[in-house]
Length: 317
Ligand code: MG
Ligand code: MG
Ligand code: MG
Image (cartoon, rainbow, N blue to C red; front, top):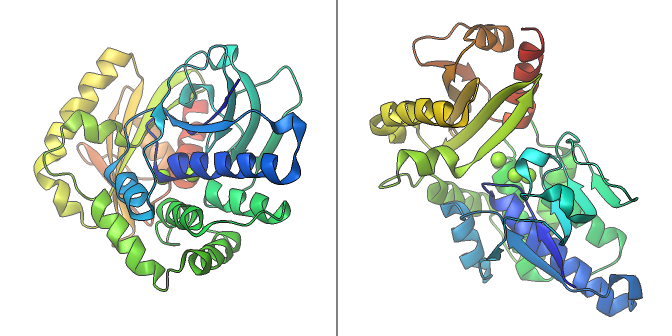
């Protein structure tokens, strides 16, 4: 039986590349250590389409797109970059979870047996995986180092996000050396350009490109994020995005849908809001909704700067 390594729904670069890297790590450890318990082959899979940034990264470092797998029933799985049921495989309760490697808050996934779990409060799952390679003394090949580095640059927005830790910076420097990349900021800019490619994409595709569902005190909340090098790239499509959010809210019976339009260069976010309880925005950020949105200076991270204040605000309703 194989073991499938999988990141969250609507995968980002970290979810895809950490799955590839961790599968490589596990398979290499089997060979090197001859560990009988680890003999099943680990296979990286994905829960959805790749975003243009991830496509660019896989192509640059010579990796194939992992196979699509959306249902966990009867499978052995390793989860990377998430531990929330809502973000995981369908029927995750009917899967056997072998390990969880992550850098988010602990989610609501539970297991009947003890598992390997490595969760650190750093900027990227790839940073945690770099640490696991080092701890186990397993050499990181240049192409794996490349995708781990790209994941760190993506998740930390080239170290600008408040989620960035010294561990991420140190891991990135070491990975860049292994991958033979002298100028990691040039790589980051190439990635951000790829990520900013919104031309010709449907509003629905853009809304769900980087989108997560949350249960906040019983309220169903969806939070998406589009990161671009210049918000003016979204001017023409903003109204269509807002209409789409309204549609999705109705279809999915949401209390709220929020969409972070993040300007990587200005280091801030315009938060588009469709909600039954507009007061949560003021409760969370101390700023009233101005029409459809609110500008949040310095806000770039969903998990650190948007999810926690909203969780508090919904808990107080
Ligand atoms: Mg992620
Ligand atoms: Mg991540
Ligand atoms: Mg992200």
